[in-house]
Image (tube, rainbow, N blue to C red; front, side, top):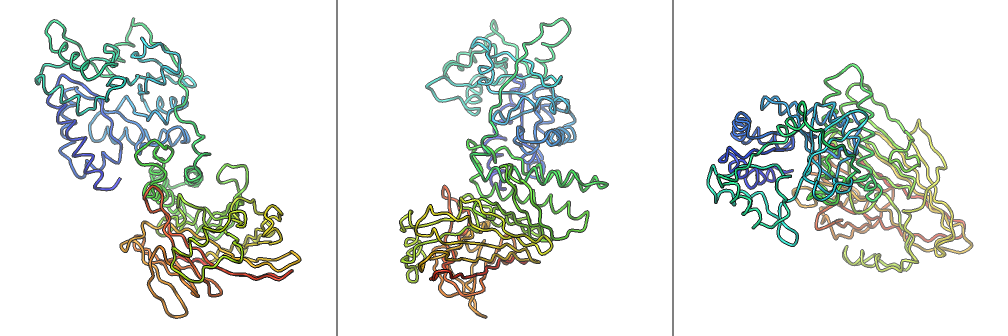
Length: 591
């Protein structure tokens, strides 16, 4: 969250709620705040902490622990689950003098295996929405009762969360509830455990409940989860029922959303690097804290306010993961290397080039690059939700894009008949050569007659990692009996913090001259390359070719948000039978 969003959350939600609660000392409550929010409040609004301490002292509230960075618990390794909970529990104990015995786990991130790390962190209870209880076979009349749940011998109590507000009517918000309370006097209301109140009515039901509560002959006793649990499990008390709950959010979201899967894979990969550190606990702890920042549950949900389509959320996750990787490198000498293993858990191996400053990841499907990391600033330069990077398209030779603005040229390409266009993005490219010592990988496009217009065209590309540069070389060959005319268009989608003047400036380079051009909707002709001035990261990104070329610049957007800047090189080819042509493109980053 940005600074302004924390300020808004505090002024509109945190402060009004706690101030209202403070005026009614007989109303107990459990509170949960994420670690980053607490950290912001500690620095910006320290008086808020004093209010919490006072309410804890009079035993009016309990503060829930949970994952410090609101992680997707169901996706984390066991040690990371414990690390996140311990981090928040320690923070709460340090600042409020009391260790939490309860934890908040977002329902969408529930998995039965979460029970064990919670128990190991001395967490005695948590909460789940009532639909989990109903799915486990609990009858409607018993939905208000807490239960035990167990995993591998570890036991915790689970309380149901019952929604206020009736069916067909607007739900009662926290602000609305306290407005009702405020109408009935400071000391006239007592809290009640959910099972004593149906919670199925409309706001009129809430009013009736409050009216009854203030009546002397109908005084209601209130409690908090920790005290209720202690009363229920004391000596001689009837044991609570035991239930097992199915997951609220399956891992299948990772197969539905490639962007989420890549961040998840990066999190697992970086965690393995950190856990291999030996002999430097402080460095290891700092690196793990960075990984925790990238485990936010919003990255793996389509229901949250901020989701994987939010570039700021993705950028923050990558920045944290790359910061953790950089910390691991500080402990040992790093040399350029080429690795091959199944990075994204799809059953096939990916190729990973790791340099001292620049790293990039190649997927055989489409032969495309899906990750370009520049470690000095901890930034993934192809982090986009729109298109994969370094893919190629073959257009028929009658596509004319030599004149017109960027928009007109883009329209001409998009208007081409789909059956006459071949996007090299779904085929599985074959490795035809690699040299680990020279950091070189060669991939070839499998031959196919599925697309008659280009069935005889063979394509090969070679990736090379140099000091601060990625070099991609293409060889296009006509293996057919007749001449082929086509437009070859390699595409690169570069993710910056934004495309406004305060974030990005673009210059077209020709020889020793450079001229600033629009960052979007621009068509350049006969240039040697582009220079991108990334003002947010204070870096210079260069894209160039061994021969002059035409190019299009467009801004990729999704849901009104800038995602990346699309750079499409336009290379017209006329290949006689048996002829081939080679082109080389270079991508460099300096800071």
